[in-house]
Image (cartoon, rainbow, N blue to C red; front, side, top):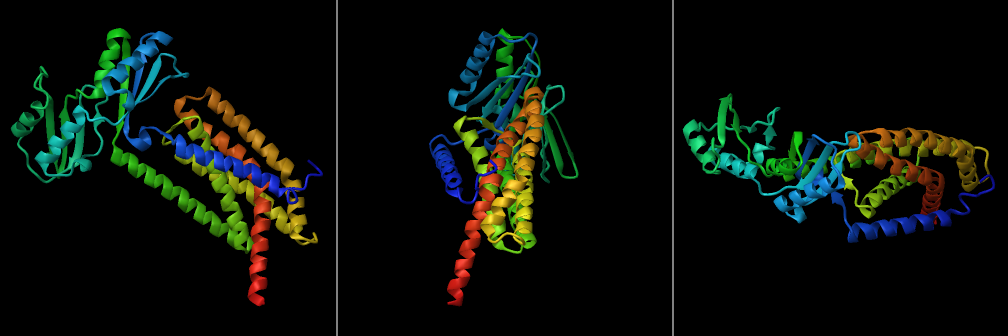
Length: 377
């Protein structure tokens, strides 16, 4: 690409980018996103089976889950590659026994149901419990009667114990949650060695989504300010931020098109993509600024700057991708959920930093010059 003029051929890059953006936007509208329980609320049930499940076993487990929660509330079933005996089932939030317990406790203790937070499970999965703040003194007999009435068929009752100290109340109870029912049903046909159940409420999921958006917005704003100060013009800052938006957009477009599950791991992945991409863009912008001292025009300086950093950009991206791809192939499910968006974002970052950053800076810079000319006239 020695003779390729990145600035003279910027329309080609802009057209390719526009096509990708339109396709991604169409996918957002038509397909939407496959939000995991981290964002939509729900439960993740990890079951370690006694034997490696066959395809027929996995189909049977999926059938059991759908019969318990309904097909609309079924999210996914994954046979872990790290441990082939492990099956991970994800379901959306459903009106379960634990929610009825939460409502009963909120009524007794005079607090909002949301203030009770998420249900916790003992380390041996023997019982569940809620820990919350309340100044109300509720008699144990009244609490026991209230909880046991929620499941009259429970042989040993629902209530286990209660403790209160300095306004912090912990109520322990035997959970007959929908998640545990799923495990029990699966155990009847496919022996389960042990299980782990984690639940996230819709309110907590909404709070995590809000935090993620705020973190990304603050990071982008600070980058805009930093680059504007460093290069002494707003055009460079805007160009870099546009490229950052492009990289994240492409990553989210892939998640929408292929219906990949979006988990909480995507938040640190997005922030990592932002940091990695801005670094590649700054290297190019630094070289362009140096070339402006000797080149006759900004476009010539920009084109020369991209060419002089091209090999560095490609080599850095390839070496980084080799590591992340290996992590994705060999890592456990949680590591894969972090590595996958990084792979997409880094590839998109190479395209935007090489083909888009300098041309966008040039376009914005020329618009600023025209505005100044109009003002002087």
